[in-house]
Length: 118
Image (tube, rainbow, N blue to C red):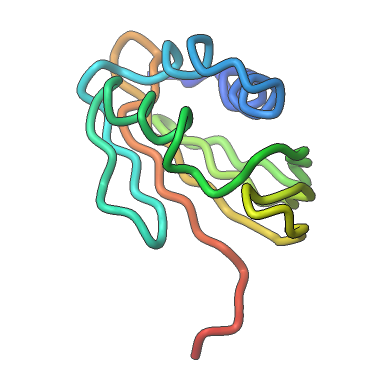
């Protein structure tokens, strides 16, 4: 399988534009999204609930600095600058790892944040 890395670029454009309908459609109906601080988000309904209310980010911009494309996966490293729902600013580095289903949609996504924890 050859993956389309532009689908990942499209995701960041849609999330920054707050286009929940568009970004949810990039994911397979049974996709799993794992993100620190949340239970795994499984399927479109869980993704929609997250992006429409549970996500602590109010708005912002993702900048992808590096993309690595594998046979059935894409990994990115980048930066986020924005505002949280409580009005505070956020500036952080992140890494995302995507796998794809046979239809080219995201099957899984795992997010990691560059933060001092250990």
